Amino acid sequence: MQQLEALTREARALASGELPLTPYEAEVGRQLQICNACRYCEGFCAVFPAMTRRLEFGKADIHYLANLCHNCGACLHACQYAPPHEFAVNVPQAMAQVRGQTYADYAWPPALGALYKRNGLTLALALAAGLALFLVLAVMMKGTLFHEPLAGNFDAIFPHNLLVLMFTPIFLFATLALGLGVRRFWRDVSPGAASGAAVLEATSDALRLKYLDGANQIQSGELAEGCPNQDDAPTLWRQRFHHATFYGFMLCFAATSVATLYHYVFKWQAPYGITSVPVLLGTVGGIGLLVGPAGLLWLNLQRHALHGDAAQKPMDRGFIGLLFFTSLTGLALLVWRDTSAMALLLALHLGMVMALFATLPYGKFAHGVYRVAALLKWAIERRQPSRLQLGGD
Image 1 (cartoon, rainbow, N blue to C red):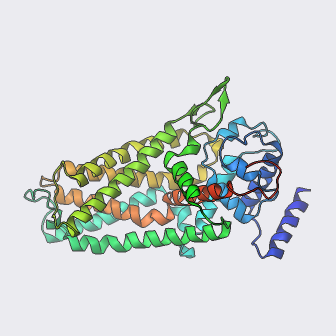
Image 2 (cartoon, helix red, strand yellow; image 1 turned 90 degrees about the horizontal axis):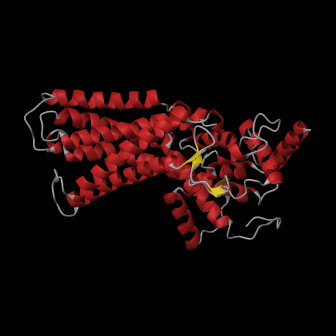
Image 3 (cartoon, rainbow, N blue to C red; image 1 turned 90 degrees about the vertical axis):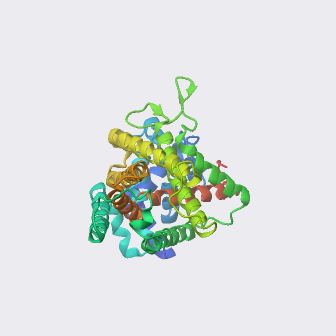
């Protein structure tokens, strides 16, 4: 019977010009059909009310719902049909497998989509070490790694225009690759017109990580906060470490932006003082990028096996490792910038930063971009009348 249904869905997809479902996508569709009949988890997160607006799940619907899922695991531990039940419903696992496929399918250029499967911790750190070694050798060719203190004058080691020439193409390519990828995703899920209210709601949900706060789980008669990690006990640590990581990254980006403004608009030359805005922003952001990634790695190592993100763990840890060591070398450079070790620390830090931005379009960073797009699609959709008129928003 299931084989017949699968063949029927494939025939419909071919007739409509849509590609047939992959095995991972078909499994998500199967599980959502069961969830649609049960609806016990309807209040847990946005996935389930969005699901109730559909009776069938095509490729675009499955990609949308998979990226709307935050993989908190709450529905798995609440599900009466979860393994070892014969229905084997494990929504977090099924969604995680499709998300990984989504990143590769929408990657730009398409030939580089395979990098998502290879972007692990070893490759990420090897790339960072290789770039850092290249920069160290470049410094050695100019003289020595250990020099007379230069009062934090980075331009004496790598001229400002050279750094701009090195980093601008990498940053622009990463932005272009991610932008074109999410544009294709957005076009396929056909979201409709976005109102200002929908944009504000999606932005708020993303910045607050709303769907890692425990939603409407009730345990022992009380509202539970947070989502499960190593067992069925909810915890807010995953949300907190994500916030430390995200806002740490944004503060570091803000520090670079302010320093650029100082340099080009006000003609204020680096190095900037410890109490200057760029240094303060970078210091606070750097601390966030130490605490957040370290905490996420700790949680990742304890993650419940059934939560289903095992296939993405190498990619997760690669991104976590690059964020952590980028921050570590950056803070070390700030502390010892007035010493004879500045050139060595600068080369190490720049190597980490280059590796981080070079891998952004083909690593874990992409999940944030696609998830925000899915949240915006949900904010738009929930303001529209249901085509089914069978419940839901």
